[in-house]
Amino acid sequence: MKKILLLNGPSLGLLGTREPAIYGRTTLAEIVAMVKDAAAARGAEVTAIQSDVEGELAAAILGARGAYDGIILNPAAYTHESVALHDAIAASEVPTVEVHLSNVYAREGYRHESLTAPSCVGQICGFGPKGYLLALEALLG
Image 1 (cartoon, rainbow, N blue to C red):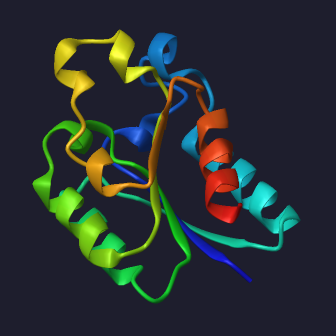
Image 2 (tube, rainbow, N blue to C red):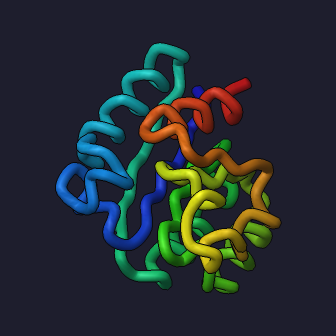
């Protein structure tokens, strides 16, 4: 059975009520349930973690080494500033797909650069919650 780690960064615990015009009305709990259900249908297991703390996310990524077959990561604001997450992804050697609900390239200029994406196997953005399912499919093959 493949094991996938689903990580969500800062402020994503507020999904559903936080800036719904940008992020939609789907809650993080609904996204997690959707990903877990889709994984179970494919014979895979998902563990979900949300943290607003960069160090907790880095520790989870590093802890995935040898324990998980893939990581779905929405680093949120850490996307644009976290060398620590970039380095953790690279060091973990676990295939990681970066996901963003909104199309970051259609937003403010500072959102156009991802420090984490270069250490990921791919990036999906702009498809709302469906992006998480696309990431799952990419990891499960």
